[in-house]
Image: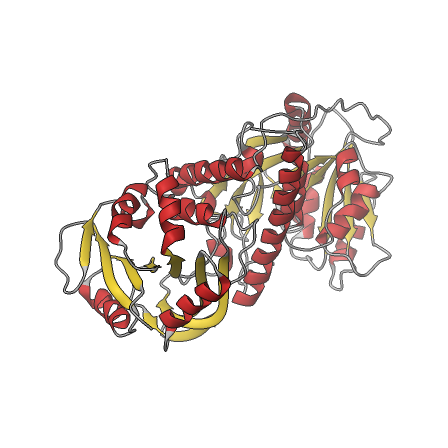
Length: 490
């Protein structure tokens, strides 16, 4: 195969850079290598483009695009040493040609803590709009697609250029996943999945998040999926509810935490009646016994479903459909607890003040001893009244605790899953209704070894992310239809 590839990579110390350059040189497909460096340096057989911002800035791509003359462009996004597999670039090029794709990415080996393991990635969908979608660190673009996208980039990003780039390419071309282990990269982030999952709401990343939202919103406008801040009004006129609010706790085998959760609900002080509906999903430890010990309190409704095929979402449907469910249904996980005695009162007030079908609060991250742990407060301030429902298609969660106007939730219904069911509800409801926000912490979210997402293997993480991408894809398509019918437009 002729030398059809230009390689672009960030500068690193020579100890890391040398093996990466060598693996590109010996591939037989590379015509040129370009290093993006923060200062003027000399590296043999490479061009150097100087910029302080790096590959994530729009300006560097305006400079780079004129330097690429080959049919294909490889972008390597890490500074750690890369090792290509046999004929890797040839395989990526051929796959791109055969599929007429705009970009190809592949599975890879991950070297972490001295151990090399396979790291499969997932298929890209229309709804794969989150900016942290894992393509791996090696991306092969069709240069014509890359140049078309760069020429259309009209915002001077410092952090979102690569994100903007692939969104623009995806508007016309396929982003194709090659399910083959093509290269080996070094991974320095050794944290478990439960520690990584809140990176996107870390306040230290706020500048980055603002740019990502701008890029995603522009993309939604370009493809006809953007929704203007126009919402259905709610009268809250239905009055045939036994209480104003119900807290719903789905639970299975949480004997260590369920009592704390119950106590945090029972101590709530409100100007209206409320109850607690516990959906006990056939617990096999002491959970059911602990719940029964509170039977003396008439506010507690203990439900053991007749079905044995319910996930967390299915348990929610049981609770919301129950005759004792109030006008507003408020979430509390079985291993968390409300932060004080005012939570239910504040949540209900938010429904009326903000005229919304759903309210999302904020929470404090704590360990099992209720001691604060990083990143601390998770407030999802990226959710704004004007653009929250568009930005919701970019981020991987909407926050907690969540609460719903019961008639809307009974109509939409919760997906019968145990992961992502809350996110699916949020983006679906936000298509028509405003989602209210409370930015002060309402509950303490425990992170501990028994959390369902504390330490997931790569296959489980991929399954979770694929599901969220799928529900985003469905919502993305629904919104395009919604806009095309003239219901909402730019």
